[in-house]
Length: 225
Image (cartoon, rainbow, N blue to C red):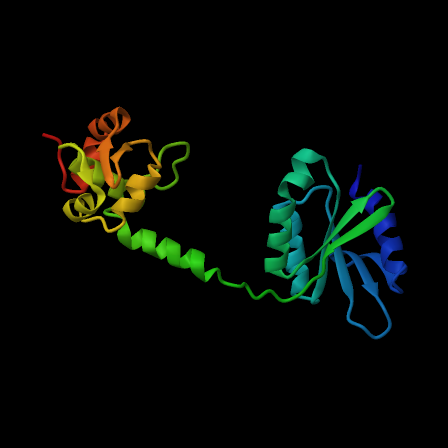
């Protein structure tokens, strides 16, 4: 397939809406005009790429209504990236057209983008930032366990329980972890077990994990005997 193979379908799609369509007007792949309205510009590529996005942004310096057009690709292209593509185009104010054989599917119209802030998520991230002690993770790494404030609190609880089973309220006080009861009850890491109502002990896994977390414990001002 060549980019020019996309043109007939796009031209027919726009003409069906009353536009006069012409190709290669200056740097624009396609320009369409309807009556006294401002022009619509369409930039074509065989795949959705940074080059296509940059072309679209460049045309926005000339006209408001700019579309990106690509053929619908296989499972490894279009379908896997569809949500990200839509989100990017919406944020940039670009429209999106998908060419499928002789048909064109409009997926997004150009328009100004006003992001709606996720206040709850932002608050959770700030809470994590302030709760986490130090900076225990290396930025840019993948495939390794992350040290979170939750895990640090679990380590504090584990250190208290090394001495033996204890009531959750006493673990909370000794470890200075207000949410200790929830951490012990949920047992996210498999470190804790309930031996009686409200009383918890360390599991063998918990003991092993504590022994392997010397550096993390040291960062919290804790140390194994």
